[in-house]
Length: 116
View 1 (tube, rainbow, N blue to C red):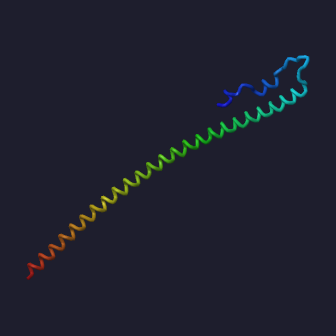
View 2 (cartoon, rainbow, N blue to C red; view 1 turned 180 degrees about the vertical axis):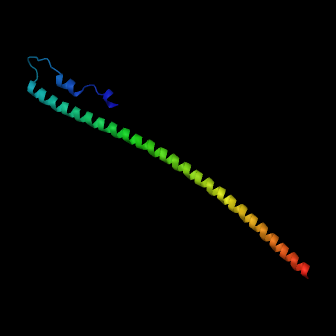
View 3 (tube, rainbow, N blue to C red; view 1 turned 135 degrees about the vertical axis):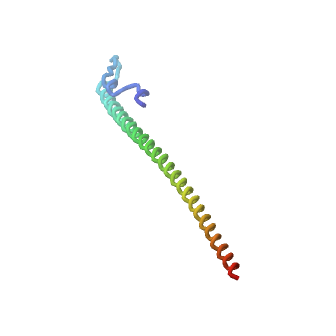
């Protein structure tokens, strides 16, 4: 990603040759300075590569966690719908029991009246 924006690579710096004028720089100083620059560039490239790998790993983890979240939400929805369905069954059962109790109570009251 960042490597497209970097103009010079360490090898480019190493192979760079300067023209020498009569009043030019000292070659030894230029070479020492370029060696330092090359080392920095190599460090930058290593850091960039490490960060790119870390980014890829984190994106993979994010995708995995998103999928896990979707699955969890789906499981919660299924559990809620099952709970609602079972509570409806429970309500129906309660209504049946009440109906049976009413029949028993009314039949008992009717039998008591008939016995009088």
